[in-house]
Image (cartoon, rainbow, N blue to C red):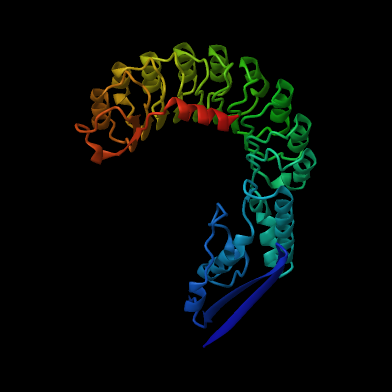
Length: 395
């Protein structure tokens, strides 16, 4: 004996009515099979990071597969908020619609209400506002505070209209924040970083890339954070003094980018001595690092997996030879290191058994290199006109 059940949910979403219909067949002996028609209409989850969420709360008496199917029909109406390609006002309306949809779900039954309460924090865990340079106002930025209690990841890169006061207002309402990006910003100040680290003490990932006002003294302002990821790439005033501060305050770092800074071998050695957990290190365009740095990284960072040394002019073949002990390296970028020759490329390919991706200069011949072992990328030469165009786009 079997019974056919149809559940229909309505919600006003994006100025239209959304109808989610779930069909399933329950067999009397406890087994179940989903109808073929329902399988063909399953909605693929594209914007929800955690697919293994507690569907058993929906209908505890049903098999897990059936509950999973129900959840897969509902989840597309939730997910992280990416404002990169939308008008800001339109995006806020979409958020409100999602909230309304969640409230409607909680009215279905007690178990559904419990589900919404327990997992509402995952509905808006990430907000991306990257490149909102001209469309968003400070008043609109501040309107985000209503979602702050659930947000874990906040991307404010290149938001040129965002003021320091607005950022501080936002931080008041994001107590659970663990990842924030404020790249390419002119509003960064020591006071702002201190307030941010005080109000959002759970931040473990911080990106301040391309913030040109940042110098060594700024690092002191967020020293209380337990950082695992730090990006200070192209903060042109970061020197060995800043590297010393990083070594002192953030021993649990896993990922570090100091590309385009003024850090030298001395600073790199200080960092790796105190940060042995490093796995990802980006040092492109660090003009003053040499074999001393690659030796320190190879000896002191046993879990090193990704290393970027592009445009490091002082590196030569002997700087590559010491990397043979870094057997966990999977990605290595040595493009534009003009002193590194074909001999070193062959050595790296043969010695680094875990290597999956290697970026090298286009001038290096591939004839003698066993390219079948990994993905080899030759970086094309950039002409002066191309570089000038990139700089214009950057401005």
